[in-house]
Length: 274
Image 1: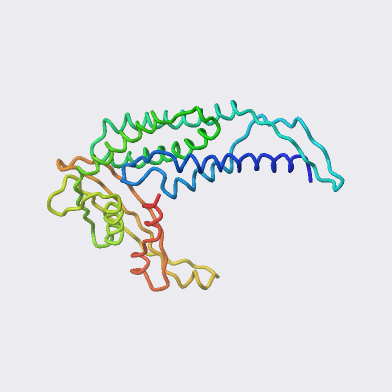
Image 2: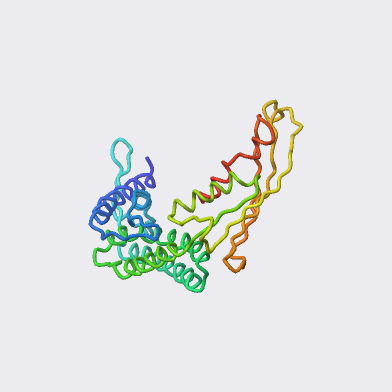
């Protein structure tokens, strides 16, 4: 076993101790409600915290003592500068907060639908910061993230209130119905109200497609029919102003024929889940 292996093992042991402290920080942390109504430390965030704690970026590691046992195995004493480690993670949090401030500046000027689109980015950034709070508190117990948490609460409350103002109608051509259903379902999943009569945003979906067969020695591929699809997703407000416009190109195949390939939604699901 090399000295590097022994060093990494020792650092993993330190990370494990910090992980225990992190678990304690999570359990005693005040609950923050996100813009989607969920608690700040969801299972997803908890898992993210644990993963980050287990892979702490130690820098300037010193080895003040080392010895090699009779069996050839190295044992080392590692020294980590807690202050430098704290500054590293404080810098990570400040970088994230800078990004949130920039997104919030755009959010403040955006239309209700624009706020919805930006809120997803802001939620993601807040999640990144939330995952670091317990770690930095475990490194330095004097550190308090309350001011940032309070800001996140205020922002999340505003984003949730803006969602409540939206009334969305989703329309599509016949080719786009599977995608339109997915969009409607995704909007309902984040508590956006859908309405065919009382609405202030219309999302229209139009798809053009062409049939494609491939000449190949691969028997399975040769028997498949592909649909090369181009979907245009457009959001407009009540005054018919374009709020968002996106072109999505996908390719789907099926052994059951062109119509079945055209109705495939797996690639759309992946895009929506992003």
